[in-house]
Image (cartoon, helix red, strand yellow):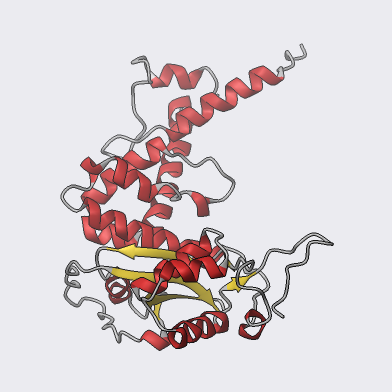
Length: 306
């Protein structure tokens, strides 16, 4: 007898049920939960849509997918946030990760985006990171910015010479998508570099901090002391760098990032820096390829300085 053809609605219902089962957190012993969401037997629920095999029951077969999902997403989150994991310790980080992944399961085709909401979750749910919530939140922001700098696109950069040819009252410089501006409460750039052996994170050559890279088995890196740090995390020649900024530099770049015209951004800066200093900043940033300009529609070309 030919089996009944499944409708699209029935298929969607089955997919949702499977996803719910696979994404449920494991027990403390890393096994599938014996009770379903409503308190009924998980084995009975599994038997409704998973066929048993010659050696494995429906529950056992479903558990394989449940465990592998959690092992994979936890491993991914831990790899993306090694600094947070170090700050909190293994047990507290695992509890935080489980709480986060239960609220923010994988919903995209790439695991690259799995930790997108991790910094915001730490701030919103401080019970998982107490008493180091502020420190962990700053570290998560820094580590997510590293992912963004590594992955995001680079637009055709604007050379420093091009800046002098444009009207600053109308010029709206865009920062490259891979550039993230941060104000941190601790020197976590130094700390994160020091945590890495041989390191995938490198200090900027022009702002060399000469961090010590602990050898395998050496003592733990001391926690950083509080202190405001202004930072740009960016990619240059396919390498992610941390570039220290002054408060005035960060303020100016934030104005530009918000889309304000160059002249207005400079006026907001006031007399905090000299014209020569600002020229040096722009020469440096343009050399790093930070600036680009959105193409304009024909007939709306920006005015050039006379």
